[in-house]
Image (cartoon, rainbow, N blue to C red; front, side, top):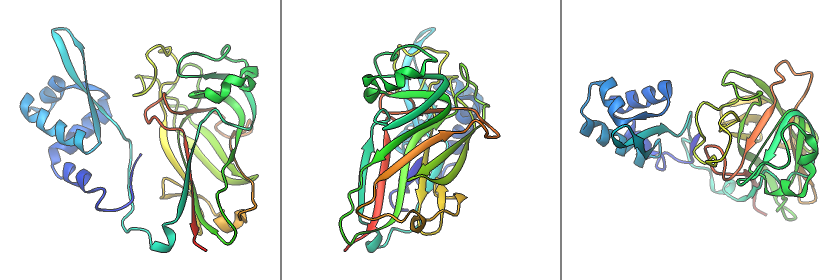
Length: 306
């Protein structure tokens, strides 16, 4: 997901999407995946120079990536869409809502877990232990993990609480790259993933699938082709009105007041896949050096100043 916090920040994207042909190019890439410039030109009846100009504008707006790879007759430029959704905050936050603490937590820095196969965990250099053996989730190397997955169970993190006496939290959000966990991979493999904060269930999101038809943008070259490759970037938000995914989809009525947070609170957050879920399709999370977004778990606490 591409997220802008104001209309002005999103202006380059609006300009890029102002031409119907560039929208058609994005539609073509979303339907067919990675394509080289020649294929795009042929499909849309354009010259190569016209396609190159459109792609340059889309690339500058952060909507696509272009990389050079070997072709049958020398090198060729391959284009790839970067985002599956776009979120724009129409109006800037009020000054009193602007105060925020932000941390990036490595996906391997969980404090507790209960794992059932299929499962695995890896750093950007190697697999930790062997596939489908939950013991390796407790090995010291798990702190350096860049990706892990399991069929059912949970992982729990202790999150930083920067609040000081008198500061009142107004909103919390967590951003992460996530997918289901199918043996091998399966783009159509729904999974009910539940989220808990301090033991309170915030709701669940249904992951559409486990993605592996192409390499992730940051997936290491050595990573096995038959495994999970990338996920979807999702943002979980709890505010005064409820709990939301990506700002618009309300998944529960749990509010920030229900969490009863203050500067003395311990903050814990859990990802869980329950065996009694309708879609018990597992869970995969990607951190820096893996997947499509090169980030770990980003945790933000918005608060009212003293």
